[in-house]
Picture (cartoon, rainbow, N blue to C red):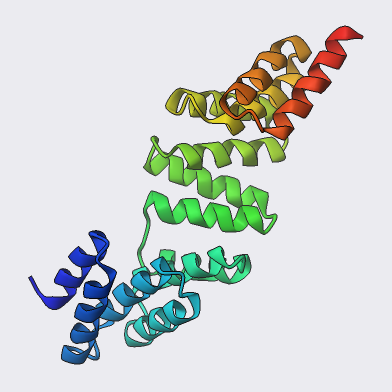
Length: 219
């Protein structure tokens, strides 16, 4: 096991100080190896040191312009700082560099979604779900994108799949309530708002939905 691999193992076990020491050593041993810089960027990102993390990812890219992991790591840092357009560019570069897993497409979808580019987001979430059908959050946002694109009935189907995968997903139940309120009526919507509230008693949107559905039923 080389120094980089040792550092990665320490990082995975949460031993940040030892991981940092080993990564410093790895950089001293092989200053032109991008892997240590990328791993150090991941460590710094984990510690919330965003600016420093970006510098290490940028160094990794400088050493290897096809280092998909560096683009992806930089994208995550930028996304967490609400710099969605910049994050999107990094995720696109990661994809061009050969990264094509469900996590990347999920983050691409989130960056598009947060940027208001909902049709692009829907396509990315669709791909994420195709690559990992058990990715509940990707499916949830796929459904959200559908709903925002006016595909309410299709969204309802996906929200039901989310609740099958995660019976405690309050937001999915809330959105089912909204979907049924628009397609089937208040009587069918009300139980979903109530289910969301049972899971998350402070879910204000679900309380408002329940209030609206109850009002419609009493008219």
